Amino acid sequence: MAKQSLTKNLVKQRLATVELALSKLDSDYQETNYRHNQLVAACIKSAREELDEAFEQLYADNLQPAFSLAGISWLHTDFGRQLIDAEAIEHLLGESNYLELSEIHIPWENKAKQLLAFLEEEITTLRGQSSHVSERK
Amino acid sequence: MIMPFQLPDHLSEWLERRNARAKIEKLIADISLLSSNNPGGGRDAALTSLLQKHLKKAEEEYESALTEFKGDIDECKRRTEFGLFRLELAKQQLHVAQEKRFDPDFEPNTAEHSALELSAAISSTKMAVEYSNCVVSEQIRVNLVGVVTMFNEAVDMIRLQEPAMSKRTSEGGLLMLYLLERQIELDNRQSIVDLKNIPRFTDKVSKRIKECVDLICNLKEACIEAHKPVSTRVLKHIDNAVENFYAAVQAFVDDDVAMMEKLTVTIRMQIQLAEKLFRGHEITPGTVFDTDEDTDAVSARVNEFKTKILRLQRIITNRAPRAEVANKHLDAALKYYILAAAAYQAYEFEEAQRLSRAAHLDLDFAKQLLFSNETAAYREL
Image (tube, rainbow over all chains, first blue to last red; front, side, top):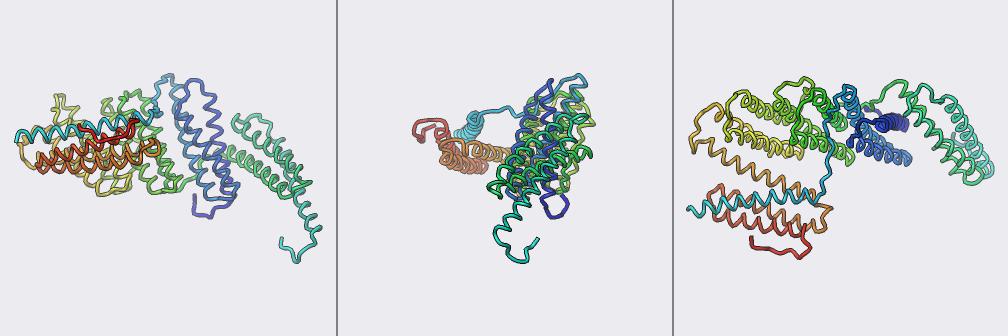
């Protein structure tokens, strides 16, 4: 945003713009029947949460947080829009060869166990190398 | 308007009610005007439904304002304001839709702008891969998902009012993407024009990391084009350089310039050595390169160990019930491991053995705290 003082009107303008873009994205996502990309759904969800919070801040006359949150909501909306557009073209080309960029949810316990196993192996290797050389000496 | 003197209460109240009624009348007039202009024909469904939502909410506010008018005049004014606000939003949205201007106009060099650059690069990579029917290995795909995570982290940091960290995270994501794009091209043995989508790096430090990617990928390309078997030693050095690249990106994001410098120097040396081996130069044992190579290998292992400990601590914090104590034992395991590696490099093997055993005991203790219901204890391993 240009270096001008933040007015209520400016915040409203941004909120209106983002809300419309998000509404269009959501509507297009609902109508898409060839693929429901989880990452787009996550973008819509995050954008909606940030936008709701931005409205709350505006109602409380906190202009700067409202403006910033609307900007964050835009970042999620824009990302979701780019992804859905890319997949629409791929669909129109008839290829349907989509690159999946969603995070596959792995429980924290599994991730932690995986890391612990790596660390343990690393220590065991160092112990093995030290004792091997030490015995040769 | 400023009152020249204090009016009697009954007149003040009358004036306030008059103003409130004027606002309610404006609200209903605006609702009627917008309703007559919003038949929905010719507009897209999203805009129509949004306008209808705002109109409905404004009507609800109007009804509430009318009810409150007879009693709580402040609440009446508040309801009217909300109603008018809804209509203002609807008018703005009609205007935006007509102008087709959706960009909220982030200034260059802001954290928001950097995050936008990263998301644009991610989606254009996705498009390039999909349209050119490239093969993307699972490892590369997982790393691309990692870049998406970096985008989300960069956005979270804006929310937490950490713009500098957010910008570094976005730039780190672009560096990761640059390596992955080059790797996709190498794996598919073709140059993909649409993959040339990374904005120019302006930061001196990130430029240096990007140069490392070029060194790594140029050598990989030479290995592919050589049409001869490449020794596992060469490949091992390249793999180590890639691992150090990831660590360098992490150091860049963490603003650990000293570590970043060290890692980029190490990458250069690893690639230089791998290139010499690849070109068939003889490396006699005990030369400067070999010694450096060993030192680098141990340093790289220590760095990786440290990164994994930090990652583990991030994962368990606020999730595992005894995370706080487990984190202390993980800190101890890291401390002993670093000392053990240093002792190993100094040929103090018995000391290295003792310290690595201590690291093992603390790691095992942390593991018990995280995954066992029994009381944790030091066990002989």
